[in-house]
Structure formats: C-alpha cells, structure tokens
Amino acid sequence: MEIISYRHLMTSTLVIILASSFTIHSSQPKQVSYQVEFIRTSCSSTTYPRLCFNSLVKHAYLIQSNRVLLTGTALNVTLASAKSTSAVISTLSKSRGLKPREVAAMSDCVEELSDTVDELRRSIDEMSHLRTSNFELTMSDVQTWVSAALTDESTCTDGFQETAARALDNNNNNGDIKTVVRGKIVQLAQLTSNALALINQLASHG
Image 1 (cartoon, rainbow, N blue to C red):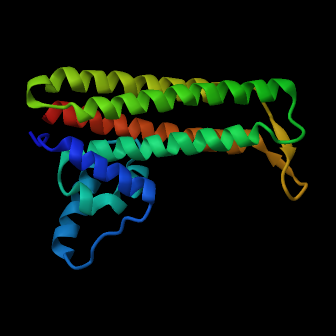
Image 2 (cartoon, rainbow, N blue to C red; image 1 turned 180 degrees about the vertical axis):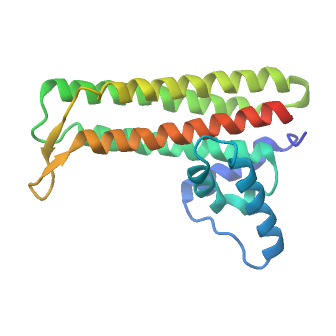
C-alpha cells in the first residue's frame, strides 16, 4: 500500500498543478511511456476516459505508477476546475441583460460550487491522513465528500434546465450564458465523476 509519504508528495502535486508548468521529461522515454500507460489504463474504467487521461497525463512524471498519487492528483485537478468554474459563473452573473431569475439561478450555482470546493478540500485533507491502519475508514470518508460534491454540481446544472439566460458580451453580441455555464459545470462534473471512479479503484485495490 503506497501511502507512507502521501502528505509530502501531494503537497508537491498541488504546487505543480497550481503553477500549471509541469512537463514530462523526455530524458526518460521508457519510464514516461510506462507512466502514461498506467494513467491510460487507470482512466479506461472511468466514465469519461478521454477527459481523465488528458487531465492527468501532464502530471505523469509525478504520478509514476502510484494509485494514491493518481487519485490525489485527480482530486487537485478537480478542485482547481471547481474554483475556476465558480469564478467564471460569478463574473457572468454580473453580465448586462440578465433577468432577476437568471441572476438568482447563477447565484445559487455559485453557492453550490462553494460547497463543492469545500467538499473537495475536505477529501484532499482526508487523503493526507491516509494510513494503512485507517485505510478503509478514510477512503469511505473521501468517497462521501466527493459524492457530495458531485451532487452539488448536479444541483447547479438543474438550476439552468428551464433558464435561457442571454446577455450582451464584450462585442455587444448576444451571448448564451446558459450554454457557457452548463458547459463549465458539465466538464467539472465529469472531472468529479472521474475522480470518484479513481477513488473507488483505490478503495478496492488498497
């Protein structure tokens, strides 16, 4: 069970993801090839394997073939997406031309995403305490937090089912705010779903 130095390794993971400057070293092609294949194989059992692979492959050299680091990286990538999505929706909610009910729907969505961010942070914190002695309990808690995050994202999406929000963009053209918001939320939900699938993999394999 590869969990001894998780806290240190995941701290490095988060720094790299936030910096957005991680590259795969070409000096070790065979090793990198193995790492990439590990990610591809792990992602093949997720609901959105292509998105899973594309979101994680840039971190292959860090992940190596470690399931714990793979799962932690997926959670950090998802957390970064949740923060970005929340910021975008918050900005769009201030667009001109929105009706009160549309603004309300977007405000509710931002609130749901705030919960999502908190739940993802809690799941990452739980992972930092992962030990052989508390493995099953910790993984159960992580599954609970990430499942809750996915539910909040679905609630946000549902708020736009009957809303056809349109506003003027910077070029004074009609912009479909609903499409932008739903697109961002759908991608976030897919990342969260993939992260949950990888968590379930880790919980099953140990």
